[in-house]
Amino acid sequence: MDNYFEYSKVFKALGDPKRSMIVDMLSCGELCACMILEKFEMSQSTLSHHMKLLCECGLVKGRNEGKWTYYSLDPETINKTQQFFITITSDKDNCICKEGVDCCKGCDEK
Image 1 (cartoon, rainbow, N blue to C red):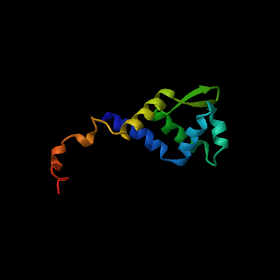
Image 2 (image 1 turned 90 degrees about the vertical axis):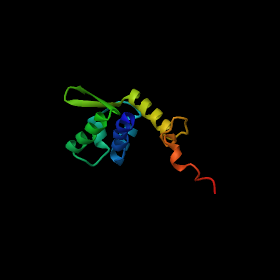
Image 3 (image 1 turned 135 degrees about the vertical axis):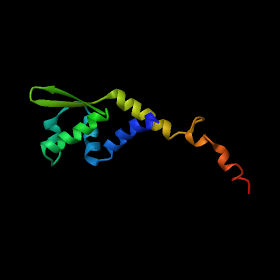
Image 4 (image 1 turned 45 degrees about the horizontal axis):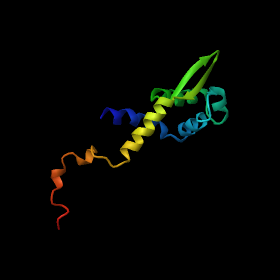
């Protein structure tokens, strides 16, 4: 259950179109906050809020250099999230739908 909770934060963060666009921008490499801000009509504080959520869920890492913050994707979180998505969208022997399958025994026999 922990994995579902952990990755729901990632997908929730991506649920906002602007945050998804920011992740898309960062897929090309590290960017300064000022470069991200140039692409959107939003205040510095709004961008900070978006970046805080992306960093909290682990998708994005920030590093300070002088008065600016530079952001990049966290490859480990990206890989784990990709694997999680593949896992939950694939048929597997240990799927949660196969737990307690006796409840519908006979449903297919009509």
